[in-house]
Image (cartoon, rainbow, N blue to C red; front, side, top):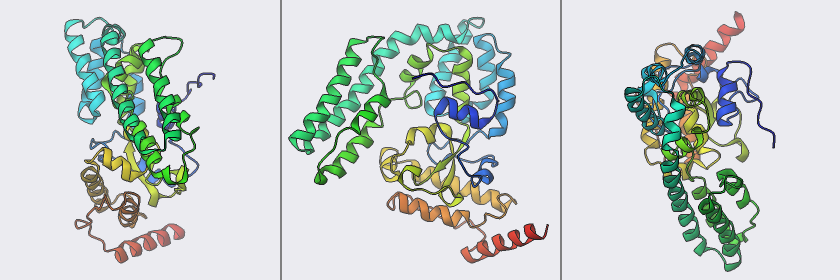
Length: 345
């Protein structure tokens, strides 16, 4: 498959889609009011999201960076916004720059490559072990088909052949080739969701180092920054019939968006039990924004997204709107009043 063409324009949409495979722009403008927001907590990771407007300035300064110290100085103001994995990688960069300020990040990553690759393999085996354990609940025929997939993955991981490397997406796609019996579908869905948690550069420091040891220091620095950039997330995935409407949208970090992929929200919450508390912070930030005059014409959004979150998480996410000054009826009236003013204008 030919490599994806690098975007020519420095837009948040183009960069997020290029580096994270997230269709940020989509086919609707319904998410635009959320994309404009600032100082919003990511409901999946708990960090404060970097607004898309910060990207142009970052890119301009990144182009001037020559050394490891330059990269660290550029990223330092965003340290509080960094995700867990990116923050741990950044800590490595800081230590490296103190000892080798004129060197570059590429050499830093290459020095760590072999050790991180060994640890990454062990992380991959842990997930494959979990998948194999769950396969015991399948019929012998289906379990054997699944074990054939995981066994092949183990062989690739151990052999360490650069011409035939283990690719997480290839394994996930291969699971779609298995057709479980009617009474096995629920457990097979659980197995596929478990497989989604194979390490990625967004969830594992070792995976990050291995991947970006073959990239430039510019790409590594950009990756750390973009992980916290705001993106529009479908609460109910589009692949499961989720609509392109603000009532089905949340503003999330690119990393949180990508790592969830199309996993049903209830399973994602089981994997990350902090999500309900992060989501409450997200809602509180949205409410605070509306109270300050933001999101005009979308005053019903907190009520709509509260309902959608509860439905899609199977009751695992139940946010409180006790701090919201509008009742549901008052919020609807505020929306009508805004629309009437807009029509007159």
